Image (cartoon, rainbow, N blue to C red; front, side, top):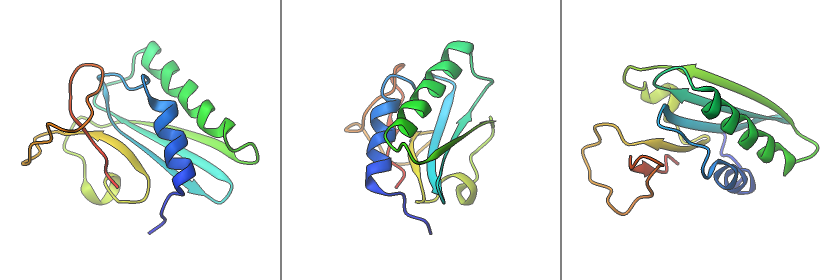
Length: 120
């Protein structure tokens, strides 16, 4: 398992504040060599505003690491998230709780009130 450096996780969390729109289900950031890979899983195609916000956030992340490159992916996936593919502890920054059996009233909320839970 590749553990994302805490400096990268913190940079991503800071950059993503205010950039997560209702269509976004999960954002995953990982480091592959000298490349920062940002993967967004959305329930529906992203609006232009949401796409731009995420692109700006990704640029802010890579700006904190000037010797690194950036790779962005957007995956539209409306069905249940396969745990092995998306929910590993190797870079998930946050994801919306969807039919989660436990109550997370103390967790942060996204811009429309969905609870967010750290996935790592």
